[in-house]
Picture 1 (tube, rainbow, N blue to C red):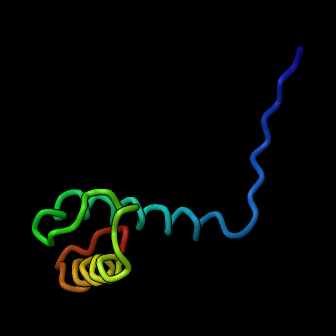
Picture 2: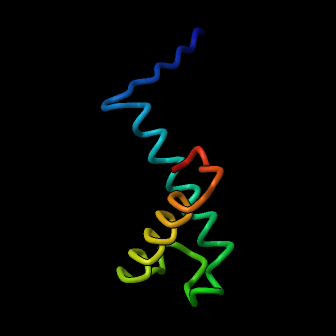
Length: 72
């Protein structure tokens, strides 16, 4: 019996990978800084306002870092 696997991509794989990396980094930032901002450490529990604040933190990290991380 033969088994074959096929990867099918719809859309732009590179853009998806970049967005996935950003999301994973944001989750990492949340887990490290949730207590500082008074946020839950689970992204699913964030309010809309908390999500916007977290996005701003990510932007600040990317724009003020001398060594800009690859996920920016």
